Amino acid sequence: MRYCSLFVLLFAVSGCGGPGGTDIEGTVKFDDGAPLSQGSIILTNEGATFRGVVTPDGKYKVLAVAKGDYSVALTGTTVAADADFDEMAWDQDKGVYVNAGKEAPKPVALLNEKFSDPSKSGLSISVPKGPFDLTVQGP
Image 1 (tube, rainbow, N blue to C red):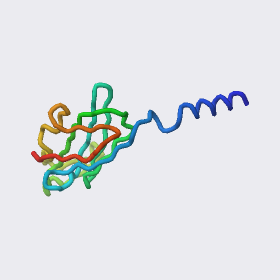
Image 2 (cartoon, helix red, strand yellow; image 1 turned 90 degrees about the vertical axis):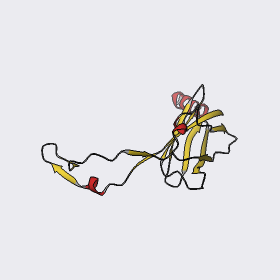
Image 3 (cartoon, helix red, strand yellow; image 1 turned 180 degrees about the horizontal axis):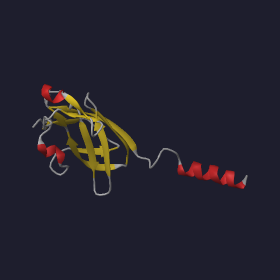
């Protein structure tokens, strides 16, 4: 009974749900209002780094962000459509499907290169104040 009480007390003091902080949500859009269709967001300052994913509608969520001011980096690439690359062949020796001798299409940047570097992006976020919506430019 004594150990059970101690466990309950420790659980109550420690809380539940990890290190704390604020879950932040926002949208990443281009100057013309179109959403960034895929990518990642990185919030960084001298003490911490937090990451999130940008969904096809341009929305992102970063969990348990500690209070503070953050520089922001964004990445976003896609692969250009290539109908020939979709042809797959079964590799009997490896036991997997492989590309039928075609080289994979090169990734295409969706954002201006400066956004991949938090010191050059010009983007910042203050937690918990916000706002958390961001505007970017294409390559």
